[in-house]
Image 1 (tube, rainbow, N blue to C red):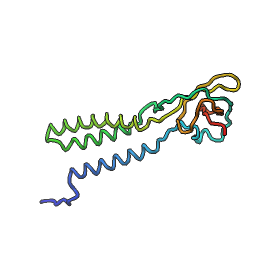
Image 2: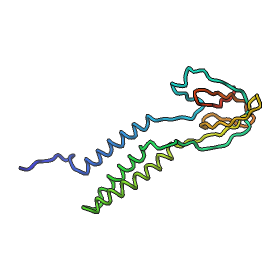
Image 3: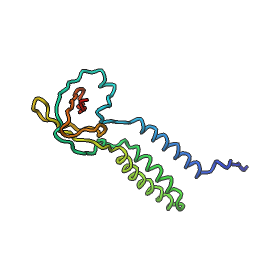
Image 4: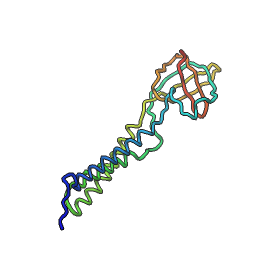
Length: 167
């Protein structure tokens, strides 16, 4: 007895469709993780909590890069999936198996590098002399311009410290 398969039901097309669904799911989940080191972003846990403020003057600002402490693994998984599926179209038999493994490993490494680069943010290391005479250094995302000589407010509480220009 012969079974007829529809045109859309081909192993190669199914692999690509499965890959597309998997990558879409991974990217969607990655979008949920959005850490911020911004002076203007508060988590729900930080909102409506008393904070202490200090006034001061910026002594200096240094450009820095802020990066996550660890990878989410999203880039590695997506890269490995894409690399493995793409390489599985090469050769046949044992050669195909080896190509799939190498493609998956190379894709995983490339995906990790892409994720690392995509999650890095420009930041400032801001040195502030408080009105009390003390000096503090705070690093935050470079989303609000800060320059030497500017009056600022240091806001600290819930384990987070921010530098906010006085308007």
